[in-house]
Image (tube, rainbow, N blue to C red; front, side, top):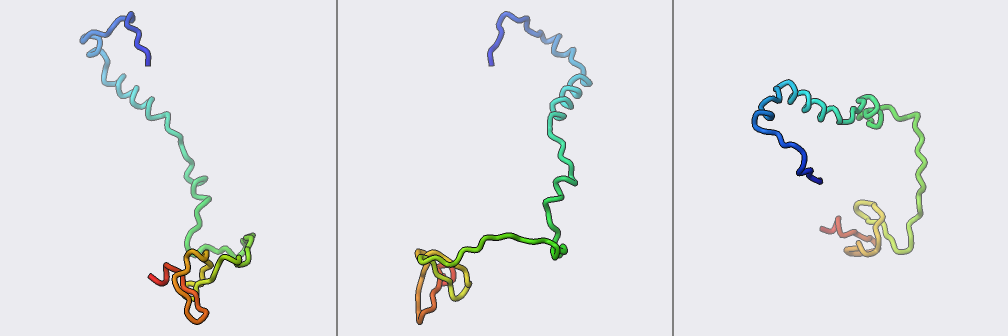
Length: 99
């Protein structure tokens, strides 16, 4: 920020002339710049536990298991082959379940 050295400077008497009410008003002006958020608009995106979602439809694209993936025999999640910890009798186990 540039400083104007030619501008008159406030003396100690000038600084003490600022009243308490002026200082409070300045503080209120600064805090009023915050954005007011309507609570009802914000709450529309949240779902409560146990809410009735029977009328809702989901559209999710499901991809079949790829050639470089496997299904863990314990957690039943599809993982990449790099996550394979062990394979015994055709049952594959991921690193998370093997730990």
